[in-house]
Length: 290
Image 1 (tube, rainbow, N blue to C red):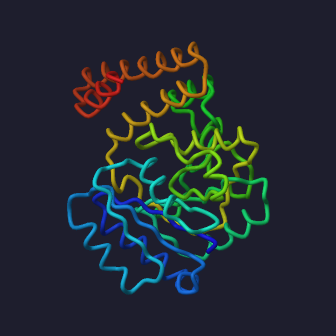
Image 2: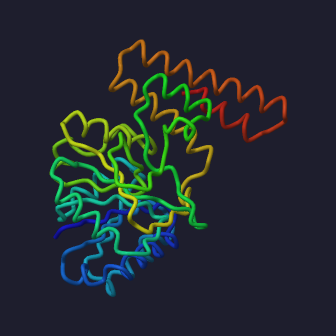
């Protein structure tokens, strides 16, 4: 088996079903021939997700649905699925994506032919065909400062290249890694719940001597925020950045990063109060508590 496609479901049974169906449409032969498998973790959705998704198994080869009794988040949920995977390569795929070509086969061939590459990220597109910023540079203090000012794209800190190229990190929305490399670094860091865990894993993989590449030659649409909301995302991005700094940077760097994050949050709380923007005020008040 060459590829295990791993999807986490949390109250997104319709999106997940559409994602699975798009995979089957493109890769039925690979599934039937025991070359591909799909593993879905239901993260304690507490709705009809597990029953609905389990009902697909009778018609789809190599589809495995696993029910978690607690919401493990992205990192631990992916680690659980990976422990059940049989493929030589793992592909972590967001439930709110749909694949429209056989780009995963090309990604498998590329990573298999380049043993120095540990991670390969796929290009994500919006429904209107525009590209999402699904790769980037590691967050040094200077880069973090630019990110907080909103200069992601201007300085190339987040990008979506149109050519195959080496990058620092790639989005967890479509994240392929050789299983032996994943095991070598002991998977995603379990202390992350959601967000930044993709960058952190790429950082550790680089320390082990492997490269991360971006692969744009696929047709993959991403609907975004299928199982979370913007406030949840911002608060957990703040948490993730601080955890990244705590684990991999010096204490002075961690404290400076924390100061920058809290300064931005405080400014936006004040702006929210002045403009009577409840979302802005409430979101960054939550961020200030971190």
